[in-house]
Structures are given as C-alpha cells and as structure tokens.
Length: 469
Image: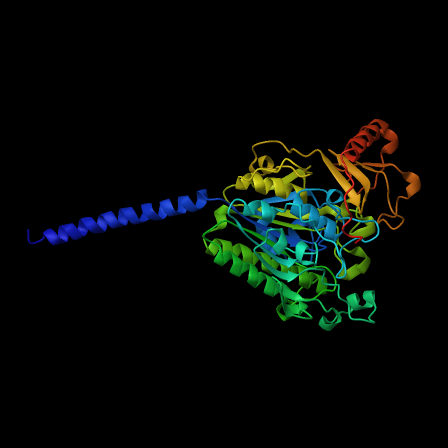
C-alpha cells in the first residue's frame, strides 16, 4: 500500500492525458460547427490581369497566389457596375443598383456634397447577419453615403474605420484634378479618416492607409474571435492617387502601381495569418475581389485587364470593366481549383445569408443567387445571365457563353467597334477579348437575348435617384 499513492498518481496522469485531448477535440469541434465567419476583401479599380495568379508577369502577389492555390480562383466573376458607388451598392444589397436608386447617368458616383445614399430601407449583408447574432465591421472605403442615415453604422455595421468617399475626393481648392492624381501629395486631398463618427485625421495620411486599415481589421478579428463576425475590408488601393508605405516604395518591377498592389497582397497575407493564429481558419469564408476594372485612362498609373477589353468607366461594359480577379478560400470546405462558372458580387449576399442560416426577405427582388452549391461542388451554377449596366442604362447581356452589346460609347476601350456595328455578339468561352463579332452568324441568339432584356426591364420599378439629390 505504500506505493498506492504512486499508482493513483499514475492513473490520474493517464486519465488527464486521455481527457485533455478529448476536451481539446470537443472544443475544436464546437468551434468548427459554430456559425461561420465571413471576410470580404475588396480592392478598388484592380484589373483582371493585375495578380500573379491571374497572369501578371511583374507584380508579386504571393499571398493571393497561395490563397488561390488553397481555395478557388473564379474566372468569370463580375461586379454589379463598372464604377465604385453602384458596384458597392450591388455587393452590399444583392440587388442591381438600378433597383436601389444607386446609379445615375448624370453623376456616376456619390461625392462629398451628395445628399443621397443607400436608402434606409435597403438590407445589407451586415444588417441581415445582425439578426443572427453577428458582429460586423466596415473598414476602408464605404462610398454609399456621407449623411448619418446612409453611413455604414446606419446599415448594420457595429464599427466603421475609414473614408466615406473615394481617396481622390475633397480635392484642395484650385488644384487641377488630373494633374493632382498623376503627381499626388497627401495634402492635395482633404479626405477625413474616421472611426465611426469621429474624425481621426484630416487630411488622411494615405501613405499609411493600407497599413492602418489592415491593423484595424486584425484587431476586429481578435476582439470577435469567440463569436460570429462579418468583416468588410474595402481598400482604396489601387485607385489613383497612388500612395504606399515606405516599406513598399520601389519594390515592384511594375513601378508605383505594382508597389501598391504588392502592399495590398501583404495586407491579405496578414488577414489570413490572423485567422489561422486565432483558430478561425477552418470556420471562415474569405472572398477577395474588386469593385470594378482598371482605370486604364491613367496608363501606367492604372491597372491592366489582361486579355480582356475595356476597363473602368466608358469601356466598362466590355469584359475588362466588370469581370474581376476573384478568389474564395475556406480550408476544408471548398472544392479547390479553378471555377469557370459565372457569378457576381451580388451573389455574395444570398450565399452568405444561406450559410449563416438567415432567410432572404421576400418583399423585394434579389438579383444575386446562392452559389454555395458551386463553391462546395455539390450542384450546378444557378446563374445563367449577367446584366451589364453603365449607369442607369443596360448596355449588354451575357447568357451562358454568349454576350450581346446593345450599346457602346464612343470611347469604349475597344477600337475595333463603333455604334454602327451594333448589336455585337461574342462567344466569351472562345473569345473573352471580344474581338470576333459573330452577330451575322447567329441572329437567333440575339433574338433570344433581346427577349431576356425585355423580361428583365419589365421587373424594374422607378425609385428615387440617390446620386442626383
């Protein structure tokens, strides 16, 4: 009996060593089975061809390349519009901006003096998730309204850090816009950096902006690691004026534009590392995309759409203006690889709602689809049609592999065609650069897509225009 205490200690040690892993396993299982977290990282004016994993030969994007290798690279993912405000409205609401009044033929985007914004009765991803106990943060560029009733805080976000407008706005009085963007200085743009309603810096030091937004995003993740969260990290990079921190100056072979994109890639790496360090990797869907295509009019200061034609603005309804470099990552959940199915930023709302167990309201039309069957490899793509709006006008429609252009602008980013050639028809599976007009060969396809156009336009109801207030 004199050794009984040793036997008891041995048994206790054995039980402890057995129970501890079980407890750890149960805790891990509970974490995995809890509601998923969602992170949307949005670039600003990033071109389809601006990432290493999408073919750029001189911009290094190792973190995004790894994200694509570990997840899914979507090759036919579209924004809702070829400019900032309507595109972001579509992403946030799952609805075409024409339905929410967030697009205009007169004012392409919201400005600091604008009196309108995303209507109070619109439901955002954040406000939908709030009904299911999620915390939500908008960090970076909002651009959906400056007045109190239109801010991120008014649309379901518990926390906001960033700019309410674009980084090229609040231009110093008397300065020429274009020359200020080509050779910028921080003081040229009197943009306020805000935390909720408090102004922290004015003008915001844009050389430190990407770093500060990344730090805020990391802090939000750490503070909310024990409950479900939605992080919307909407960078201003690589929108002109181009600014980067000293750490990234003259690092890229692509010049200052490459420096800015490489700092953006660094930010993505920091977010992914934070998720992993905090045990959130396997329970977090991360999506990286852009609000629209590159601002090609700024030449080397703008991006590249790669093999696609067009870009932001006038050429926006050619593929380069709205087809975005997009990556999904969710370790252990997604079917990894390249996804060639069509999807749009508007699909994120219904997809996230489905994954969070939040039913979609039935009092409005949604233009997004739940694409989770494609993500998980369990079903077919629900989307067969993409609508290409430039401002309030429908310029083109894609159905399956075929795309019809009903309208183009004189400066459309594609020198081969004019309005006299309309309608244009392209097979995007064969000709993603939109060079071979096959309209004369397939009048029946044009007829079918014109009927889709009529059916779609019959669903539109006039609403108050928010960009013209």
